[in-house]
Length: 355
Image 1 (cartoon, helix red, strand yellow):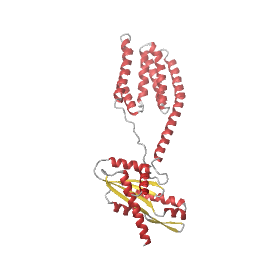
Image 2: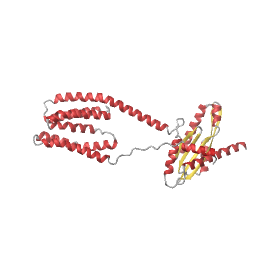
Image 3: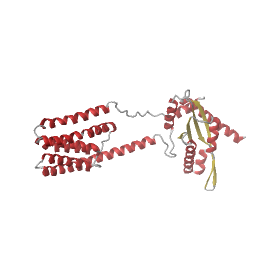
Image 4: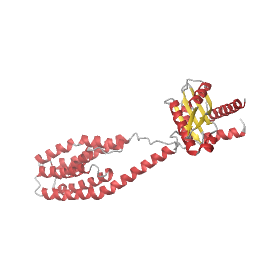
């Protein structure tokens, strides 16, 4: 291979390389720790009940039964939260009721439990925003109401008014800021996703670009199973003349149509990309046709006459294909062989035209 061809192959391969994306790996100890944390919090709340159960058997035994019934919800809820990063809808209700039921134990807990419930409400609103705020408000008021009814609290109405106003204030103030943060994060994720897509795709044709091709080809070659892999490099014939004679808008239309035809040829068999300018490529994993057959099929698929403003434009392409055993092939080897075959085909077409 001459120096110019070697430089071209190196540009095709190495300019397409991108840093690997390392996906987040779940911590294998996350779920066991979540179970332990939930059980510890749940069991720790039983202690105040047991400590006064002998003094007020009826109310405390009833509330203890309700408290114990919340245990499975808390355990499952915290496990799911830690494993998925999303809070289950039942978790705020269970957690807030869990706190407010402590108000049945003593006057101290009756005074402090609503405050803790408001803190929990603020926490959940800060995490999740106001989209499900009615359930936070219902859980806070419901917990205070249940505790007050179980203990016959003479200040129940006053507590409900104060807690309701406090919860509404928390939801409005904290929730508004939380919604703004969530929206900003959502916009950021959308922008990152769009940038990630654009970094691996061609804006004009919608095909993948060189970076995507190199990434896909690297994955195919990393697969050690037996079989072959095919790479076709495609260069449009006389594309500069089309741009000069008919304008760049017509040239863009030609490129888009080439992309559509390549996609139709590839279907689910491979990846079609636009390398740049009037150069395209097609990666076929485990092709059934030979290199010569693939080249002929692609040239036939990309050959047509396009009538624009009364003028007929003959569209064609020169295709070079390299088919190699995946276990012995390399990026550079595939690109080099396909690039060499493409230029040989282009030279042959020019010679045929002269003759």
